[in-house]
Length: 497
Image 1 (cartoon, one colour):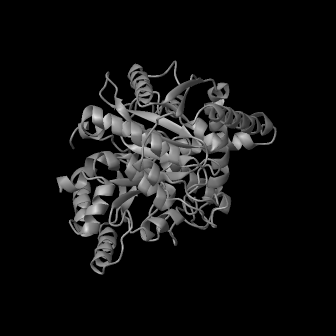
Image 2: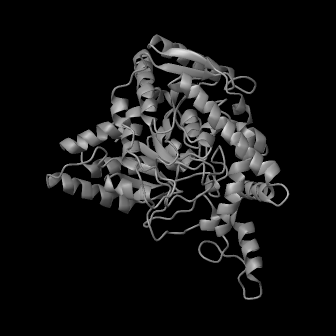
Image 3: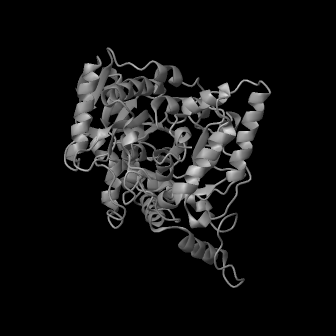
């Protein structure tokens, strides 16, 4: 079992295609791993043992029949519990949807099934994707496999922890302000936020519609690229979906190089609040890029300093609108419906019982920002700042091919440390938020361990919209250089569960 769960997704797929392993063997190995360690990690909210084995048997039947298998056929995957699945509950980490089984699959779920990926189950997350630590889940926090007393990032901490604990070789996350990249950084894994509109949002429970984006999570750059290719593409059911060919991400991941590439370093992505070890590893990564043939350019993007403030007006405003649908009338939890209360009272009681503190905080903030008399001062101003950030990116990409930065200002912090300080929690997304506001693509990959605590540090790579392949080209080159330098993937250093 140990040998199987340590394989990459690409290796698993090759061994299944050749007959060296069966999809059932691979699935059983990962289900056994989940059974052995997930009580400690709490990466999963729901494990679909029978469904996963049925999918695996179908893959084995295809191979035996001589059918050509896809690049990820038979590879297990952990799916963030924000995508609808007609055969499993979709709770979004909230009590208001506890036990709800949707009547349809999200487009992304359909694409995974069509690619013969084996969905193991649904992973834990901050409620409605609102958080940076997975502590806001109504079903309890997830632990970081490097140190179970620390957070695995958020909102997609369940997906990143499943990867880092070898419970799955692939996972799906969503990124509204960094919820794929930040968990990847603090768990030593790879996470990619595709260009906004590059992966369908149909069937993804909405938090902030102009920012939300699903994307791949993996332990290697190539695995992330293979998953990216499987889930991306135009979807007529999503009005924001881009009707254009998917960038050649797999080809880029197989041919990593930064030779002659112009790499930008933004001065706003360092300073007060950044952990010394994080900046040390980032500076070493920049020197590594230079040694690999990249030209490094210093950039000044002044509007990035306003990104956090703009985000925490835009995202709550959109969430206050999106979450209005959870009214106890159509689906989900219903509280107080005893025949004596009005519909408004039942709605209020249900939301009081069903939503957690962070969701309530953001709904109240967003409703206030959109209210009469405050709309222009808050929401309108935030949208103007968003335009300035987009313009700063456009100017930057006239000078460089990609931008690099630390993914997060610090390594994983202890569970509970920032629970009573929302502002300190929000600062975890300082480096990731500008990309969401502009709609660009970005990746986080490991760049070493912080010397002061021995925990993973993430390197963020940002590329222009629809140039996602650049992420993989640079990421693959950096990853290969790190592996050559240390002789093994960084994740091998993670303490055993």
